[in-house]
Image 1 (cartoon, rainbow, N blue to C red):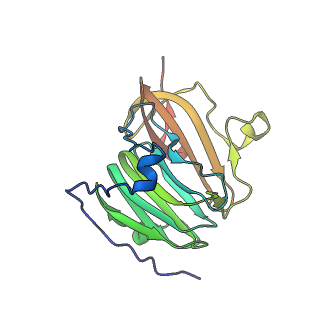
Image 2 (cartoon, one colour; image 1 turned 60 degrees about the vertical axis):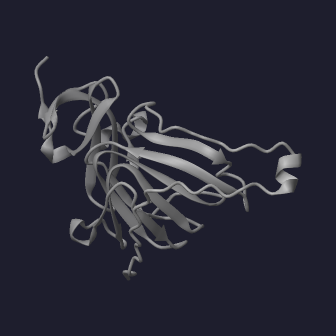
Length: 210
């Protein structure tokens, strides 16, 4: 059963800083500035707080490569999303569907209520900033996802790590892969240069000579 996704788009041009109260000043608490990093093309970076601590506020940044599909999943907490780089497409439902995606450009905000099934797709190297109250967990609807990095799962993949391939975004080397039996989809991360990569479906890749 699909749920409607309430996405509020907010473009912010001013940085508002709330003054610290007297107790904070006496405790020596200072403001925190965390620049947007350039530490690779994927993964989760902790900005502040601890996303693993129940009841504690946190801020994290999640990076996705160009063309990456984020499989349907849900979180046990409300997820507040702000796009800080690239273009993020967000949709609600139990299965990934491009027709259900809504575009979010830099500065756009979305609230995904806890336990709502949702999915995403990135256009360009995309970074979203997520804040909420921990613990932060990603629960995929397909609990049997196979990873190329695990030797026991390699039979599900046409290509292996290190293979040179040609795809929609050029020639590169396979770095990662994931197969979803539920979604009947296999996706690879193809590295084309230092800190440069894109995601492609298996049917869109072919072997490339060295």
